[in-house]
Image (cartoon, rainbow, N blue to C red; front, top):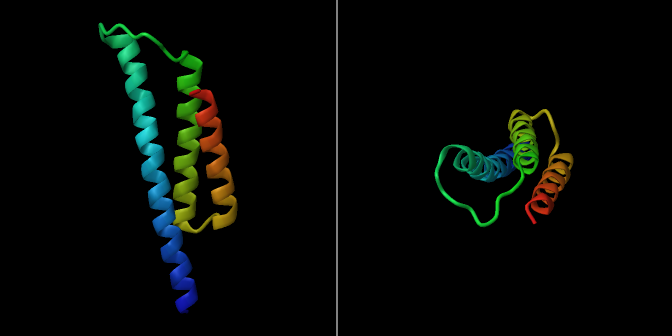
Length: 95
């Protein structure tokens, strides 16, 4: 019983950490989209809209994966693989 509790607690901690990171990155993407359209700021470099929207969609998928991990519907190993894959794609799009 103790081993299952440790796995559940570990999954909960990892899921919450990943969800917080995804929400922070998603909020940055949403802020950039807002700032590009509704402010009078002049940007030296602007990401294309498709990059911002693709990143937002991928990060929403990451949040859904985190929720699935918290509820126990996905195991830790596939969750980590998919999360790292999403983060690598987002990082490559932002280069």
